[in-house]
Length: 319
Image (cartoon, rainbow, N blue to C red; front, side):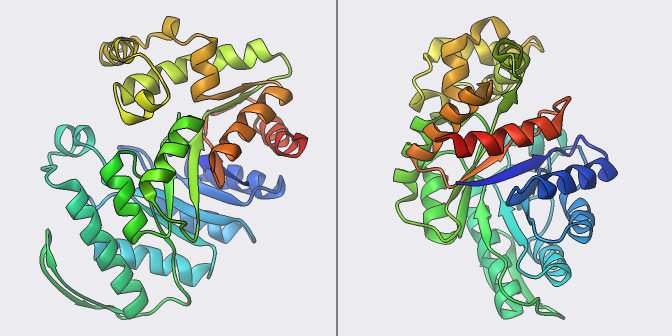
């Protein structure tokens, strides 16, 4: 298993660079930069991170085909590849109606078709230097003024069965959502249906403390919030969460009062990796056994990030 750290867009750009440097110093393989609306933009932060690090791979995880035209996405990714050849991974996802329509006023129509078209155009721009495409974006004709060295891997940040099947057709890898259980990882691999060059990564909700009760209680509000965001979805259904419980978690999130009371120890063990070093070892190796290639530690804004990184590294070595 490769280890990675997600860096939240809630962090200042300077703090994000510092956190990425810490990840590299602690021997992690990758750093993934999230781009949620309306937080810091991933490409600008990625440039700063690449300039301030030497070996760590930097992933954009992920950007969508709505707020940036695919040619613009290719321009951004190509510039990063020039800055640090071979250390850049581009993550693309379809986004969601809540962000696009409700927040930004962008019609959210045929997202998977648009995502497929975006992948094709980004690849053409980066690998061939020209885009000649008719589809969801209309007629696109563009000659790139530069060709970055090498190839930029494209991974898809997707969740549902049709989107996972699309990833198996067009992507170099997959980045699964946070709270992906071992059962869901295995299910997703079946939907992808092929071995991808970069394999399958997932954001993993990790909380560490020598006092396991402290670590587990600390992550319950986060789990309640994101289970509410997921609701009755493949991620929760495949993991065995009762649909009524999923609906109650969803209602709590909508009401601005996450149902922490519904996140018992069984729910924690299913959807998170939380506790002492033995707990971390058990949780991470359950994901390995399910087929996960890269564990991307989700950015919980932990009070002692170096201790967390040390614990995660040690946990992987324990079993």
